[in-house]
Image (cartoon, rainbow, N blue to C red):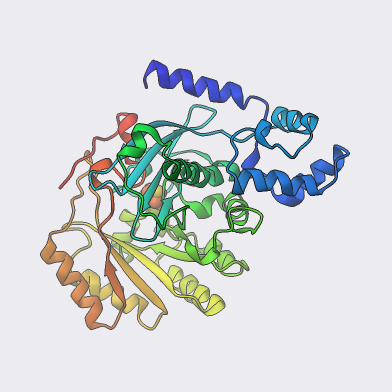
Length: 386
Ligand code: SF4
């Protein structure tokens, strides 16, 4: 880490010292605070308006609030708790990955991916990850800590602010490296597929989702959000009962226990048959289509027999399979499958009538798979391109 970056982290730490992350707050909580401070409760809505709609970075800018209230808010809460330590833009100018420093000096990754009319942010939910999938850079770090709800929300705010600055022509050198289609004014979609297992940080995840979804928050439709899990069965069943229609994806990667025990070690606790029960419960409870993610790894899970196993395991489910040729991480023995293997794997699923897509990950040239940039920073990996 450079001396400048170190200095910046210290500055954020000092700036938010003793103050709470504003983005963790719900509107009713801020209304209670206003009440306790002898303020009319409508002040809370005004603050939310400034924070989520105007993307204010400083309470001092909230011009329709009394000065004393602005000062008290600034003493109590912080609107900026993340600072980009590294920014990377892909060669195709459509993917922007940020290594974001938290006030305690930990770092997480978040990625903005631009499509024709969509701006999707890939959000981290934990620092590191306890699940330990051997092909994943985050899995090699172990779990450092959960993110609080504010740190999850603020990753989206970070990119919302960036898009706002880009359209205003004030995004500087970084802005000149990326091309934002005119119709994309804000973040449109979220995938909770960054560092960490989101369902292992369940309460903070949902607090964040609700602030992002609320009309007084970022007003992002629940159906535009997808949470990805490695297979925490009790949490999948709980997720199915949540009222918001957030999409769920299961990172399956193998449909037999022997292989999945190695690839996604949580499988030893909740094996494939139990996971399939939870998946069926989710579909029956929500009547929503479930996604399966399958990172296709050469010689590991890309044989037609593995596709057959998958097809049999999920047959009859309202589901879709995303086949994702691996974004390879060095210092691991895993490589991306060949085009022929990708094609053959997909052909088996199609023959079984299972809807599927091959998704080539964006931003391969900037280490966009989860945890790769942080792992590289920590000297755990270097990133390779096939
Ligand atoms: S793939 Fe997901 S669940 Fe597995 S170690 Fe990486 S972040 Fe954790």
